[in-house]
Amino acid sequence: MELPEELPQLYKRHIFACATQRPPMHPRGSCGASGAQPLWEKLGKKIEEGGLSADVGFTLAGCMGFCSAGPLMVIYPEGVWYRPQKEEDIDTIFESHLKNDQLAEDLVVVLSR
Ligand code: FES
Image 1: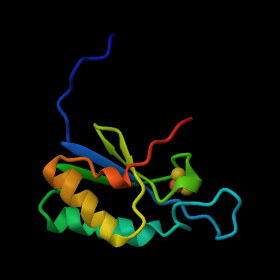
Image 2: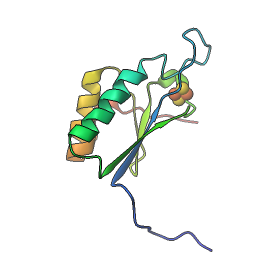
Image 3: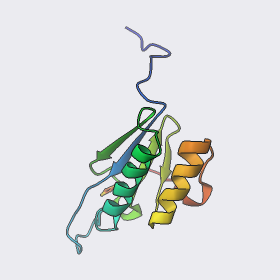
Image 4: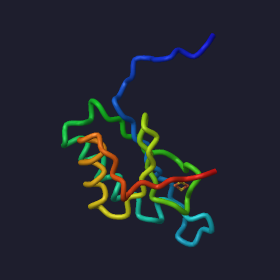
């Protein structure tokens, strides 16, 4: 059976945010060791309090394979990866991408395999 061209979507957007925590001196590093947790807490709160939780799925994820680039989050369906460093960056991503459908260009990270 072929894949259908379009299925009804549960959310307008779905965010996956890496919550993997390795010890501070681990050779691979981790998003958690790079300060991810307070950022994701803030983002979850903003989605909830900003009235977007019906449209935006927010899922804490395991390692997404680019540990030294963290903290990493990806927003689908656009497939845009962001690397927020501080809480103000979460405000920017929320306002720009989630509320106004605009890329938060300065925070985009382009990864390659
Ligand atoms: S620990 Fe976050 S991508 Fe690997």
